[in-house]
Length: 428
Image 1 (tube, rainbow, N blue to C red):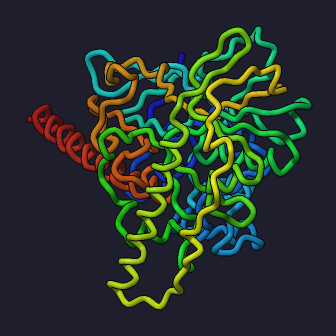
Image 2: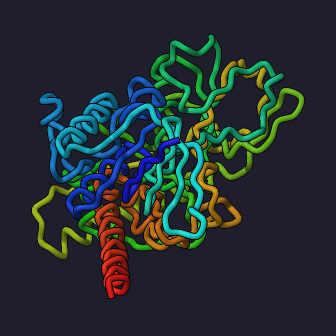
């Protein structure tokens, strides 16, 4: 059986894989990129129909290509539809002539024995590589908590399976998860006329825009995108933000005023009754505090720098609490509440089962420093907080890819020196 050899193998052709390919090419590193489906497949087949990018087009992109170059209808301040985002990555792959092979799945990676590099089994054959970059990103295996058993007779799906309100049966819906996905799906269902229960956990709730600037701009000028480490205890706090309908600030209390029924974290299920933690008010207040904090910092920045940005008092306006907030629901009989579907917007876990190398901690997360793993030659790209807060965003992964390409190129120099020196010894 023939074995293909390459210096660097990149696994995954989403935003991380493309960014990695661009910087490897610029560094003169021979490489190939393997993608088991299509480029940016998850944007096309694992997201709901109305999804748009959460950041404006001027911000969430690679430096070398505008969204308007792909779709002239997308302006700098627009939020690109999901198909446009996927088309953008396809266009970018052509722009940089990325050596991508689609329809090839990586099955197993092992260290070579007694010699450098790695042996990678794929659906198209065996490849040996000196370096391997896992650019599969953080959204790999959907998490559905084992709370409500299948025999309960309720349609259950992860947010990756949701497409539009029309696919759900008649009746009410429970959406579990108050991050961007859960909140946007819940709002869409409410607008369609569904009775919606939203299970709200801990979250950050930035303003979509403030004083004429998008929150992405504010996080930039306030230095928050470049925050190099997570705050202790907030590693998994979700961000509730939306680009839907041109972008708007998510306010759970206002959603409740429109008829959405808020509950605390979903905890358990027994005999047809689902129970919730008594933490709804606490979670809402923490989200509100996060919202006010960013407004305060923005105001201070405007004053400090003398910027001519209009004041926006309405950004701090509140609405009276609805009954579901003043008297939180702690348990629901699913049948009596006529809940016929549950959508679990509960995130993902990484899946590195194909990597047969001891470089993962007790939580199956890779041990790494800015993407450089504990095993020489193995790298990770696209991880949340890989080097900074913005690491898992399109522009952030581009910067992390440059760092990894520099590391790989440096290692190649050392290896090339060794080979040249060894040749001199053999000649002598």
